[in-house]
Structure formats: C-alpha cells, structure tokens
Image (cartoon, rainbow, N blue to C red):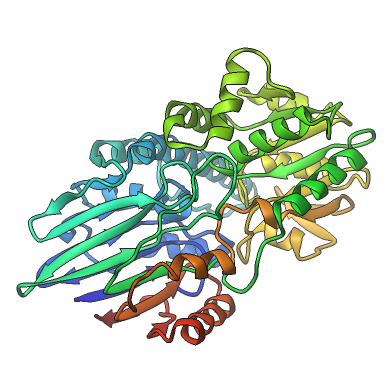
Amino acid sequence: MRLTFLGAASEVTGSATLVEADGLAFLVDCGLFQGGREAWEKNRAPFAFAPRALDFVLLTHAHLDHCGLLPRLVAAGYGRDIHCTPATADLVPIMLEDSAHIMEKEAEWARAREEGRGGAAERALYTVADAERVADFVAAQRYGREFRPHPRVRVRFQDAGHILGSAIAEVWVEEHGRETKLVFSGDLGQPARPVVRDPVRIDTADVLVVESTYGNRDHKGMRETLDELVAVVEQTRRRGNVVVPAFALGRTQDLLVVLAELARAGRIGGVEVFVDSPLAAQATAVTVKHQATLDTDFQRVVAEAQRGELPVRVRFTQSVDDSKAINRVRSGAIIVAASGMCDGGRIKHHLRNNLPRAECAVLFTGFQAQGTLGRRIVDGAKVVRIFGEEVPVRARVHTLGGLSAHADRSALLAWLGAFARAPRHVFVNHGEAEIANVFAATVRDRFGWNVRVPGALETVGV
C-alpha cells in the first residue's frame, strides 16, 4: 500500500492524500491551496494522478482547504462518489459555489485591469457551473456507521469536533488478503469549544495521518480569551469598529454564540454585529438544521433567536448595497466577514475602510497561512496592498488564539494518548514545516512512535 501526500505536506492548506493498494485508488480530501501566487500555481497544476482512475473520494469536512479543488477534479473526469457526513453534504455545494463566484468576480476584475494595461488576465480556476456539478456525486454517511465505498474497503466517520460535519476517517483496506486500518484525523477541534462537540477518541490504527496546525503551542485559556475579547470591544466601540475576518463556516457561528453569552452576562453592550457574508448566512442556516449534532450552548442560542430573545443585535447582510452601507458606520460595529485569511470576499473591503483608522481594531480568531493578507497583517506589516491600492495599517491588531477551531499541542497529544497501541506508521501533516517537525519530535519523545513528516508529493509505502 502506498500513500502520496499531494497537499498539506509541511503546510496548512491543500489537504489531499492519495491511497493506492493493489489496483485500488482513492483520495482523502481534495483541498484548495491558499496563500499567494505560489498557492495559485499549485491549484492550476495538473493532478499528479488520473482522476478517472479513482474509485472514490473521502471528504473530512467542508472548509475550502479540504474540498476546494473538487470542481477541478470533477471537471477533469472524476465521476464517482464523494463520501462525507450529512452536514458536510449540505455545506459543500454552498461553499464551492461561493468560492467559484468569488473566483469569477476576481477574474473579471483582473481582466478589466489587465486589458487597460494591454495584458491578458488568467481565467478563474473554476466556474459556478463546475462547482454545481460536484453536488451530483456527494454521498452522505452518518457518524459512527460503517459503509463500504468499495468491496475491499470499509469506512467509518467519527466526529472530529472541528466544525459542523467535520470527520475523522477510519478506513480498513484489504490488500492481498490482509486488512490494514488507516486513520485520517482531518482537522481536530479543541475540546470544550462552543457549537461543536469534542473530538471522538480513536484507540487503534495501523497507519495514522494526523494534523499539526498548532502542534508547537497551546492556546490561551477560554477565560483569558473572553476577557481579551471584551477588552477589545469595549476599548473600540465608542469611536471605532471591530473588524473580524472569520471563516463563514465554523468561526462565524462560534463568535455569535460567544457574543450572545457575553451580552447575556452584561459584559458587552452598545454594539451591533454585522455578519457581512451571504455564505455565512447560508452556513448558519445549515448549522441550525443540524443542531441536534451540536452542543447545548448552540441549541440554546438558536432557541433564543427563534423567540426573538437574542441578547445581542445581529444583522445578516445579503446584498452588495447592504454591505456597502456598513462603511457608513463609524463606530459601535462588530463586522464579521469572510474570508478568514483575508484573501477574498467582503472582508477586503472592510479592511480597506477600517485599517487606516487608529480608533478601529482588527481581531483575528483563526490561523493565518503563510502568504495570505491576514498573515501579513498579523506579522506587523505597516502597509498592505488591497485591490491594487496601498493601505496603511493603523488599526490595532489582536489575535485570539483561544477561539481556534484547531486542537492545540496539549489537545493533540491527549487525542493521541487514547490509542491503545502504537500505530506502525504515523505521518504528521497539515502544519507549517517547522511546526510539523516540532510536533513530530514531541510525539516521538512522548510515545516512542515511528513518526515522520512527509514532503510535498512524497510517496511512502506502508
């Protein structure tokens, strides 16, 4: 059996692992690379395998760095099942169609700019029509229920506690009369977070592929995180706005629960929350639909909202005109918009309008990959380029690691500690090179396991 690490190898985007065994071939995730020109070139590169030769695809969750290249895969000839949880099956179409819409709009804008300069702009990576075709192949599978995507393969999804519908994939593959169990962690969530439940512990694996996004450090405690959030809001609201780049799926819903809890406790007031993302509105609707799979905090907030008793004012904006109207709000607003890494979507407009204002604040609640606009701001850039313009960074910049949807070092080690015996092979992925290597060394020292960090496009035999 062979594993080829097509993405998320010593980086945090582009998740995709090819598994091959005696004529069988399947893919675990097919994610978009994010973070500048190099990522864009990777997204446009030919697949390192034959899409038509795949027997099936397993999808761990609906974030674009795990599902965002599925339209290209289908356009290249893949026409079999894409297995995922029911919530992910509902989320993938809206995530991909929104991604395609943004790509088409940005390509249109770039084309107009380049034509004015006498040059030629690249086409969008894929179209809305390409994205819509993916839904024809999505097959929903419930948590904890074993299914057979192939006569020689058994699969069971377990709750990864990362976002709605996120899954750990337990995969049993028969090869030459012997069965090998592979476990793909997907993105593991931090325990005791709002909205989602804690990750399910797995106790056996022959081959384990585990993420390492925050494998070199622990998050701030929730109490400290909430204190900092309150301080940012109270320090800003009278004269400026708080701009929150947030993933439309996962982080936005977490924030709404947290802000409602803080308002109920009387810790924040006098603010209006704008969720400026049609995608976030759709994702929130899907989240409400699947609330039975989520924790009681979220279910309580949903019930309050349905009764008209939500303790904080929240407005979901849909139209472009509604979005532009937010620019006239000079103070007292918490503006939540996608994308979470600031590389697309409406957040770029809000950053352009609020970054130059010293009385405003930008609040990051998630990981910022290398090469992204968000990473440049977090790293302290004094000036950033947005829509071809130089924008000074005068607003205060804060990072709230305690709201991360990714497990920190201690949580990752606790999850690994549930294994009853050592896997034969452990591969650390979905982490920047330095972090992945630090985490691999930690796992090796703590458990004595056979651990390595695979390189991009590396194939290993197991």
